[in-house]
Image (cartoon, rainbow, N blue to C red; front, side, top):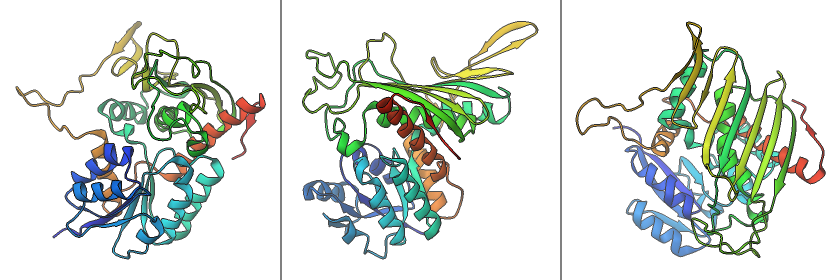
Length: 361
């Protein structure tokens, strides 16, 4: 019988309930045996819905980490605590899946990476958007060399009016920022992964808080409280890589724009280009004509059957658990997520100082 991976959940709020626990429940080799939250009722509810019959409940994550039966933990807490909880878990002998972004700051993320190397335990970050059908197809196009040298890219995470009004999303102390660190991180992760380029040289950026004090906002989740809105409502960055390639990053929760696009990108190479602005579109020149190719990503062909319907989150957790079992490699490597955090921090720093940030690798 296959080994059961015993997992502890640290933080039983929105992201744990919306992504981590439902996805883990779909994987036969997983047992969720420990749950921790500073609000005991949330941990108890999670244990009842997703845990084994003898699942334990904690309010102190350090007590959970003393459980020697646990193979791995999922860190689903606000950004401020990602680093120290992850490091404590790694040093307690647990593999760690940490929700994105890796950490509030580059130094914190670097310490997480170093702890993973030091302990020999696996560390991955929750960038599940890599596992959508569109993005897997685009990655194959890039790996096959169909674009040639990719020298310009755009990472896009633009919402028109979709400010998250629950939890601590609007709290700079807990999160480290707003849309840039929340959803811009997904778009940047995807773009760098497609390019397979993790060597930034210079970053310049700016952040804005222009709409946060408005009322009657038509926000998707109801009006926000301006007094609690302590982060930016939009942020933009310009990144120059060591090889000269350029990446622009656009992010917003609230922006007066007609077309909203999230976790999308555009890549331009010397042989062709690709974007996910309207499904997947590959553009190139053939027989002296400009061509656009739109692949059919449905996996069916039989009436009423569309093939494998696993969600990106389930696929992401499947890869993670296989790596813990020694059956495969991580898709999201900590050294990749570290660079994403480094660039995000550089954009925030540039916005505060009004100067470019130069990065030495």
